[in-house]
Structures are given as C-alpha cells and as structure tokens.
Length: 286
Image (cartoon, rainbow, N blue to C red; front, side, top):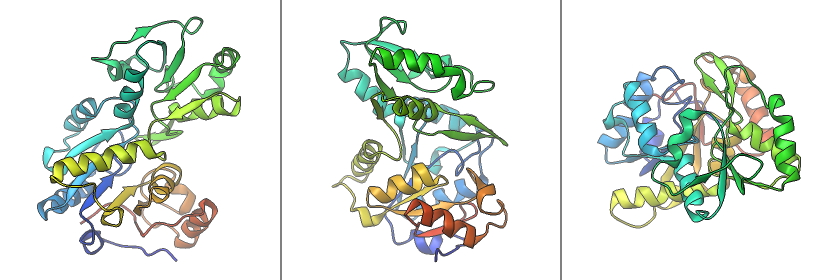
C-alpha cells in the first residue's frame, strides 16, 4: 500500500536531486502554489539540487519567464529542463528538412535561434507538434483530416509536449500528446520529446551533474515529483527513479478529491498502471 505523507521533509533528506514537474505541482497554469515553492526552496537550502522538468513545448528560458510572471522566485529551483529543449536538439539535427509547425503562435519561440525552413503541410518534410492551434475551443477531432493527410505523406512527427491534457485553472485543455497519440494510432511515426520518455530524463540528470560539479547523480539519489500517472509516475519509474505522487493536480477527481483523496482508489489507479510511487501527498509541502 502506498504511504500518504503530510510533508516531504523526512523523505527528501534521502535524496540529492529533485526532478519536479511544474504544471500541477508548482502552479496550476494561473497561480503558483506557495507551499510547493517553499518546499523546493528548503530542499535547496539544505544542499539539494532542484531541476524543474516539464513537458512545456518551449525552451527553458521561456518557461522561466512564465514562472517569473507567476511569482515563482529564482530561489525555488536550480534549472529548468523542458521537452522544448529536447525538441530543439532534434530540430537542429534535421536542419536540412522543411518543417510544418502544428501548434499555436505562442510556441514559436521553440525555434528561436535555430536554422529552420518552414513550409506548409503539403510540402513539409516533417511536423513539429507543440499543441492545438486553439486549445480553448478545439479538440483532437478537429484534426482528423489533417492527421490523415500527414499519414498519407508518411510525415515524421516530433511531439514537443507528450501531455494529453493539462489543467488551466479549473479547466482541462488538450495538448500536443493528444494529437501525437491520434497520429500514432493511424500508423504515423512519432518521436516524443518529454515525459514519460527517456531523453528528457537524460538531459535533466546531465544538467544536475553540471550544476553539482560532478558525475551523473546515482538514480537512487534522485526523486521525481509529479501529478500524472501517465507521464510523471510511469516515466520516472521506467527510468529507475523513485516518485513522489501529488494528488492535487491532474485528474484529482479520479481518486476522491483534492483535499481528501481515497487511498484505495489511488492504489487501484497505480495497480492498473503497473507502477506505484514511493509515497503520495495531496500537495507538495516541506
């Protein structure tokens, strides 16, 4: 049975590095969670390293500016590693290919500084998907014809955000992962750049090593924190990391409520996923 913790302090002391999800743990898309920010700050003050690891489809410096607007202080974390960073590396290695960007204009910063030739879908060599064009009104159903056309041309898709849905305040909105999964279901070739896939964890541990001035941290000294079974829990566990699962974020209603989650319901969710976290908290608190 999974253990509930009121505070992370006793568990965190067994680790040198925290890989902490952002959306749903540090903020809800609108406002920061003060207790979570304070907990990460306290961990750093004790000599630990905090890497914020996110499926945001933009470069880490752009994520940092968003956090600043939400009043997430610099003291909360040491570095940010995003699926956008991984995406940029892939795009750079395909500099000779014409790119169709499937996603909103706000994500275009993912290409800043790269030598990219953009093209319409009809003449593109590959697709970089960062989300829906308008996630406030659209769903994956709006993209059936486009995805079918991509499949007919056998276009390779780079998914810059494997999240299927994410919270924006009290609303769930679709992300790039929903389109990528639909494309894969059609037989399309997809490379997922963020959690739950290994490249983003490799980059996060390399970043932690550089910050700590040494070798890649041992995986048993790294704790991942997140609110998604599909991305955070399964991804980190597959990578060999312990996980602290936060219930107040994504799909909290599936296991009771945000304030009083049902442990039996949680364990059924974990059993179905075939993986269990080290412990569970309703919200990150030191």
